[in-house]
Length: 213
Image (cartoon, rainbow, N blue to C red; front, top):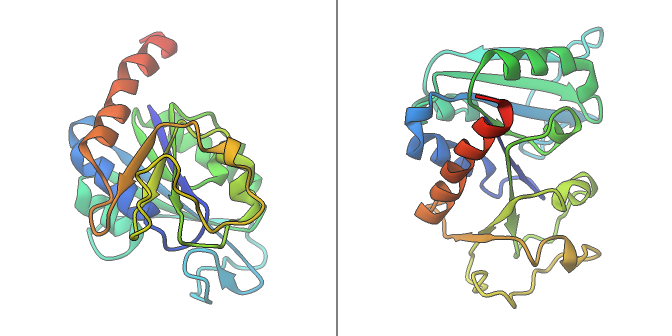
């Protein structure tokens, strides 16, 4: 089963959602994959240079984390993932690592991916989009995938985001892309709720049936 957690901006809780789902569904023996895209010396993970760029003659870099820790890939291991990978590519060039990504997906039964761009290469069984109504930044690439989300995870920062009529501060993002989707409000530091976990769990039987298992 392939679960993808995306989001519309940086630092809004995507890693916390993915790690929380791994922790609450640990029996599924997850492999985790974090995809970072960078450009112009700025890492899309933190919004500042972090040294994650690959060498100029390498289209991507893929590494495996072996120890639980404070890095995103380390947090996945700490949450209970059996393996955890970090893929770095230049912005807009994920296709250069397509073979490696598909190899990971094929070799592991249950994969948790933190990335919007993975949807360029695969169709997930569950795609959750993390939205922060108080964060004005909304990447164009995220808007492109929003309509494909199976549900939205709304970060509650005092705007009563749990209410259907809650209005985000984003501009030029059609309400029709997200308003009618199942909604899971979360309040930091708790980024995963029981209904969200059960929503993902319910998809396992559906995914198995469609894979012929």
